[in-house]
Length: 219
Image (cartoon, rainbow, N blue to C red; front, side):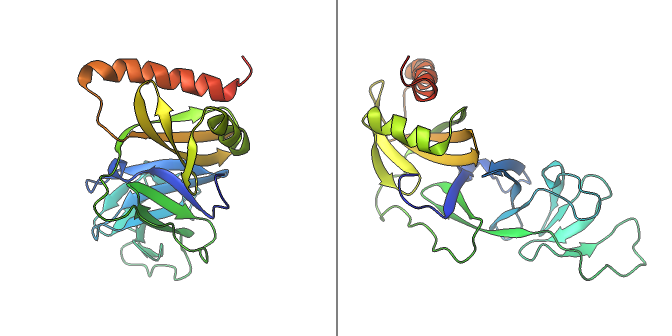
């Protein structure tokens, strides 16, 4: 990590549309379902239905609820509490059935998730600063400490918690490092200037080289 980090950049906020997308994310080995309810507020939940353990990322958004894909149990935005069981409409909903939820905020164009809800949220970019243009997310087969060391060796500079800024293939890039698992990170890559259509393929090839340099720093 670029500094002690209790919040993690799970994914670019633009990927969580208001049209009902539910995105599966792994964060420090924890499987999450990230979605946006009718209020527009980002939700980050344990990716497991309390009923039968099915991944909630397979489900669908119904207004202010997330419905499991298996038996359709519906859980309320915010609390994660079960509020409806469509197959048993006449039966009372069990009051203690609840999905585990995590704190989530939007900052710097990213969805940040805290596994420790008492941690202070990351700061947003200053007003008037144009946000970098998101390019892609890519998995890297390396632990977060290895990624940080490799980026520093490649002359990227820390730009905040879990965030680096530097120059690569003629572009000024911002990289957010998600600690996905013990030996896997995800780099969320953005550019300060939108590349031309002609430059995109070249830049993406350069990003593959960047990944290789991180995974094999001595090769």
